Amino acid sequence: MSQISRRKLIITGLAAAAGGSGLAVAARLAGMYGLVPPDHGGLYGPGETLTYAAHRLLTSHSLAREFPRSMISKIPFRNETAPPSDEYKLHQASGFRDWRLVVDGMVAHPLSLSISDLRSMPHRNQITEIACEEGWSYIAEWIGTPLHEVLKEAGVHPDVRYIAYFSMEKDWWDSIDMADALHPQTYLTWGMNDGDLPVGFGAPLRLRVPRQLGYKSVKYVVRLTATDSMKKFGKGLGASAPEAGYAWYAGI
Amino acid sequence: MRVTHWLTFVAFLALLVTGIEIVISHPRFYWGETGNVNMRPLFTIPIAASRDTVPTGYGYVMPDQNGWSRYLHFQSAWLLVLTGAAYLIAGFWTGHFRKNLWPQAGNRGWRAYRARMAQYLRRAPPDPAETRSYNVLQRTAYLSIVFILFPLVIWTGLALSPAFDSAFPWAVNLLGGRQSARTLHFFVSAALFVFLLVHVAMVALTGFRNRMRGMITGRIRETEERP
Image (cartoon, rainbow over all chains, first blue to last red):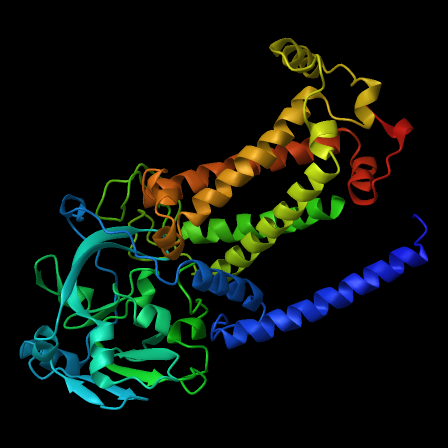
């Protein structure tokens, strides 16, 4: 081994101290500017935080790719969901007439919206790809009410940092930050490919988040909650996915 | 410099294992933008899948390992990219690429490649200079790994990120679409794996202990060389 000189030792020590304090400052700043995901703890926290922070700096306002109508997948793949509950079957039988989307939490005007209420709000359509973490994907036209329209009507408090959303399916909930919640392509989707949203694809209401993997697009949405922290929900990891071992941020 | 080699090794091994786990959840590959079990695949890997939605012909579903595999895959990718950046800066700064990897003058023609290839095929002992330096085939292989395959595997991997593609749509469009990018990511990873196998075999053939010592400490014993 080569001799370790005093100079080398001092320089290494100084570099380590600078690096350490640099990291601490970076972590503090990242927290202040909302660059730390709710599931930042644990072994894979550093990688997740790097990805999320990099994406928030690079992709805040970018739009997911949209495709021509000719590229819509002929037979979109309907992924598995849990068997429908009796409550869901009742809603299905009545054509989702009594389905309600509850908007609560840190909002000025809590809402309870029916599907026809949502349909009467300004709505849009997009032809985007949905990609599953497993590797498969398809393109469909999604028709819905942009989430920001609903949030505007509810009057979101300025301290709100996340919108949590809940499925009628048991233990299925998720959340997105305000960059995705206010994003023009994030829709409360009730139509697909020129028709109503089919049951297998999340009828009557699916929150579509096209800049993230498919599992963020939760089906059968019944509730939105505006919050300043995800610590109060479940195990505090921001969604049911991380509790099952999957990352909260799925923009990869 | 040597520490970047071992960090890359750790990151690559983690990426390889977790990458295989992720493929097991959908061992079908497609070409173009979209692909799913309702579409004809380009090819399939004849193994059971970790999802019962994938028809594989096996009446068996493998255990799902995607959660931690994905977390570790992306964390290792960061390690690989940051290490790679440090290596590139150091490589240009110290002249490592110019001195040790760029084929030497007079060695840049087909003749040099043919001659060194013939030497391998004859199983002739390497030139004494090769104990401390790389021959033209090694130089070409290393340069391809550093400047072609690793950049490609990073590019094709990033193209699979929907958020990255929203900011840089050309990254996936140039590759022919999302599923093409996934298929290319698979093939480039396979090529890197083949390199790893050959690389380890070469180290073993030229004296595993001595070469490993060289790769870890930077010291090499000249007399221990075997053909």
